[in-house]
Structure formats: structure tokens, C-alpha cells
Length: 311
Image 1: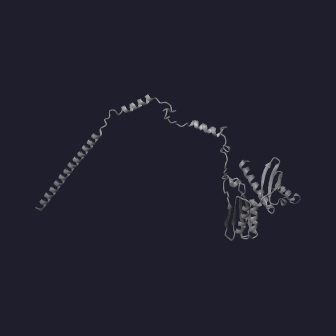
Image 2 (image 1 turned 90 degrees about the vertical axis):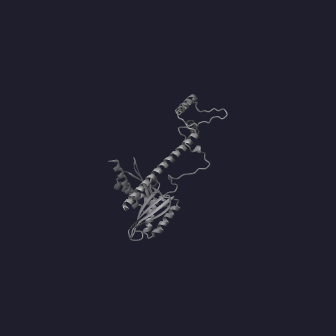
Image 3 (image 1 turned 180 degrees about the horizontal axis):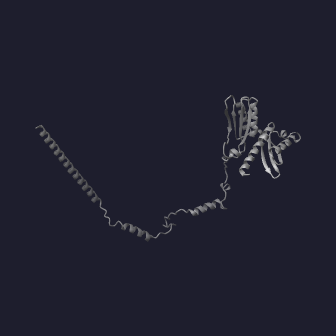
């Protein structure tokens, strides 16, 4: 059998066993189970509000449950252990079953929801949520939610930390589904943090490869040494020496490239600018006179043409 198919069958069997216990041990306050397969057989731990009712007089009920597990679910040598729930108000399965029973007895859903979630928070829970879905008050289905405190809805904390419980209330108008989520007290959430006062940092800093914090800092300072400034009094510096002859040769080569270029003086530049302005003005005057002469000639020609037409 493939591993995937085996996982599916194990999960289906676990769900069927859980439903069987919820039906058989509802009056005893069934609070969940844990199943573990061992070389000696199958170890099942039951959590109940009233362990005495689960065991029965002289162990009659527990023997009946063991026989049912062997015949119905093909478990090899099931060993059932019953544990009492310390705080029933913090067990989601027990709370959901109580709330469903209260609705069946005629409690108004808002009163039942607020009363139940207040009891959960008074027991020390960090957060709780109750969801009622179905025909709560009329023929039309709807969903009602009651929230208190802090609750996780997704991710690993929602699966590992949050306790889930489901129950069903059978009413005259129809069934009402009850879902309860509880974060127990002292739960370690991944986003929790603590602040320590008057604590040495070295006590909480782990050593890297056996090196202390001081050694790591010294190693960083050696790798990135700052450039030292020259000493004003002595005129010395820790920087490496540079050959001055090489620097002078490079400067000389750069200056030689511009020796043939003549740089005019300031007076010569001003004279050149004045000559340029005068030449521009002369060109503009000549262009203007030429345009004026052309216009006059055109006007004379037009006047001569008009006189010829009149004659």
C-alpha cells in the first residue's frame, strides 16, 4: 500500500474512533483522545470530565469499549487509559457539547454564547471564539460569532496551539452547528517576546566557533583598519610611501600636452567681442537697407502699373 493511501486510512480511522467515543461518552463529558501505536498494541488515552462514568461499575463500560474497538475498527490489543480533565471550561470539545445541550434545552443563542465565552475567559484562556451556524432564530440560516481575547486562525499555531471543538444541536427548525476555539493559558505563541532589565548582554549572546564577543570585534577591527591621519607635529603617516618621482613625471606629461595651446589675455578677449558685435551690426544694417530698396522698387512698379491701367 502506498504511503499516501496509508495516511488517508489512518486519518479516517482516527476520525471514526473519535466520533464513536463522542456518541458513547457524551454524558461523561468526552474531551478528546490520543492514539499511539506501540509494539505491544494500540495505546488510547481518553480525556473525560467524569472518568467514573467512562470506566463504569467494576470496569464494565471500559471492557465494552475495548471489545467494540477490536471488532469494529480492527485494532490490535487496544489499551484504553482514562484521564480526568483538569479544567473543563478550557476543553473545546466539552464546551461545545455543553453549548449544544443548552441550545437544545431552549436557551436563547446570544445568552448561551456570551455566558459560555465569559466562563472560558474567566478560566484563564488567552482567547476564544464561538461560531453558531444554522437556523438560529428563524427559517433562514445565518452565522453568529462571539469573540474574546486573542485567537489564531491559520498557520502552525492554529493547528498546534488552538484547541478545536465541534458539536451539533438538533432543534425543531433545524440543526445548529457549534464550533469552539480556545487558546489555553500559558500557551507559547511565536510572536511573544520578553523584556529583561539589568541583564548582561554577554549572558544571552552565543559564542561563534568558540570565540567571544570581544574577540569577534577585535577581528573585525583588524580586517577593516581605518586610514590614519598624518601626525601634525612630526609630519609622518602610517600610509604606504608613494614614489614622488613617478608622480612628478605624470604631472609633467599632462602639462606637456597643453603647451602648444595659446591662451589669450583678458584684454584681447574683450577686443574680439567688440569687433564681433560691430560686424554683426554692419551685416544687419546692410540687410535692412537691401530689403528697404527692394520694397521701394516693388511699390514703384505697382504705381506704374496702376497709371497704365487708368490711361
